Length: 611
Picture: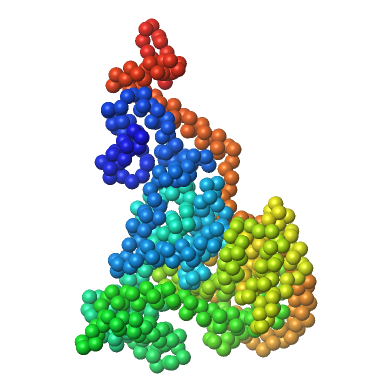
């Protein structure tokens, strides 16, 4: 208690928030503790409190340390810390938003691997925050991109928007030990709410430019036509991410888009117009009917917030049209399109399939298991970063994974990190969203798939890890058009939206198969495709390379021994400092106590310190 009281007083004076002591600070802290306390209690306080600040020197052990401190409530409340940064300048009820997110991710949280204290580890937090935004909004957050089945992914405190907008918080999450102590469910919800709010605040900068490009200043109240113009400009800026566009160029672009009713930007403008009218209708009861309606910047910001939450699902309609095109090129239902057919296809929806073979290979969209017959994996291609709309440095809108929906149903029922094969087979065969037929008939699972699931369980000690690579591969075999193949990427940066550069990663028209010879190639290869399809249906190709990206790796005995040695060395050094302070302040009680225990030795009638 003495140590805790002195520590709080010391850091309040220093205006510090992290337990990271310099040698001079430690001397001052211990000296302040000695005032008004017996020296014996000072020694006991340091011994009892050693684990609380050892995190500044080495990783916490799995017993006690910050994990134990978190369980006992001695760490600052993480969700309160996060929500203090997430307060909205618009006065939005961030607590209510946090509760909504908590309800949305609860089943997935229950299904993820936990630490020894039952809290979510760093890897699980990263996965869950990414999963929430990708599944609900189609957002790909910079710093939370797919990890490509690698176990060296970035952590949630390294998210780009946190590092830019709240760098002190990101540092405190590490310094105060929260990243090692683990996250409770409400902590994860608070982290997601914080990231969401910071992204919304960043999006507001584009809204300022939208006002400027239409000749308004942000405080200017607008009528309905003016508000529609501003919101339309915002959506174009958000979509194009063109920082060099002038106001005149922007207005010209809007006029050209309006002249083509089938143009993508015309439908984008219609989305903004509907959002404005919905807002006006919702606020009509509070509007004075006897005065012309005017809408301030707060109204525009509220509309933008709602648009950002809806925009991903609206954009995903384009992804479904793209999938429809590719499924038409997959005659065997294997989720594969022959590469020549992929390049030669002229989409009725205007899509251009032009990514290079090297790029498709990097992101795991190439199947080259059959010599001389490269194929494009539909699910991997659809979810690839080349189909994302890069909207800012921190956020991209990407196609939404149908496999995430399937996993969500499984997690909601199983609520555990692994499950027996029989349970999974029974559940997956009856998932209504993944039926074989339009009438809702259950998906038929082959004997090969059932046997493979048993094999995965045998490789993992009897249960199937839901978030492991082998189960992801099994899902791809069972749902090849919905679930991507779990390719282990050499560099996870290839899965970011910023990595794709059309000038580098796209094949020019002359390099794609667009001549009459393509038709002959298709006809000549039809028999091979038929044989290939039959072979894969009978015996899918499996890999035994398991990766468990959400499971914390056990610490080696060598690392644990090194930590123990460092901990013991620093402990003895601290004891020496305290005893020296006690000796100087005349703490005879300490000398007597240590002498009785053999800690002090008599030499020629004088007490000497053991260090």
